[in-house]
Amino acid sequence: MNISQFIKNLQDKPLKTRNRILLAGSSVAVVLVVGVWFTSFRKEIKNINVSDISSSITQTVADSAPHYLSVDSAEVSGGNLLIYFSVHNDTTDILNFSTAADVKLTASGQTYTPSKVTGRTQAPFVQKVLSNTTEFGILTFDTAASGSGTIIFDNLYFEQSPDSIFKETDNLDLSKLPKPDEVRN
Image 1 (tube, helix red, strand yellow):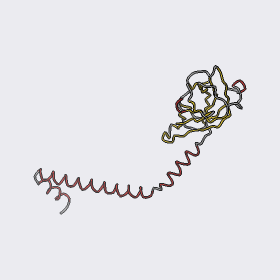
Image 2 (cartoon, one colour):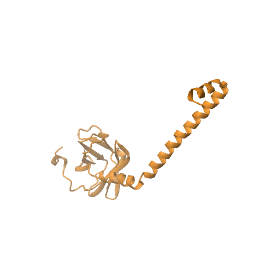
Image 3 (cartoon, rainbow, N blue to C red):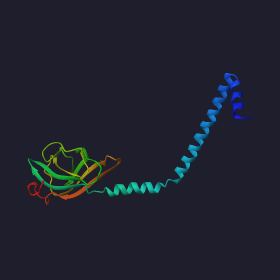
Image 4 (cartoon, rainbow, N blue to C red):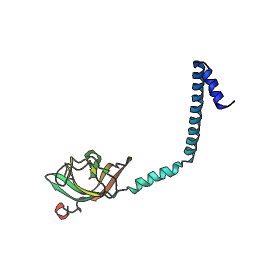
């Protein structure tokens, strides 16, 4: 039996029988395609080395260890502690900066949150630090705290990896920081 006789034989069958043959043939084809896809997918999953993935993620977070922020100076003005800082984004990605609620200063056994975070021109500080740029800002705390302490900038992340949230911690001695007029902006 050649192909043309096979097709002629199918065409001579009733419509209901042809539809059943079409449905059965299509179902068999779908099962074969899904089976081949599933088999190749399982092989790919078996070839993935989870330890390589986790070590590369850990390495990425370690590479982004604290080096983007630095405290430049501090002063007490009008009963408020002003901490002048700079953010240097030396990457090719956009750095999303901490909100005021994500910044904590611990000094003299107390923890403080800044009442505002502004740029050096008193405008609100940028939320995103563009790649290969430096931004300068001021943290205003409603206290005249002094002595040594720790400042934490939390919830920092890059646009291309928003799941890799990190923080920067800087130990500082407020009495030894230079005054703002001694620092070049």
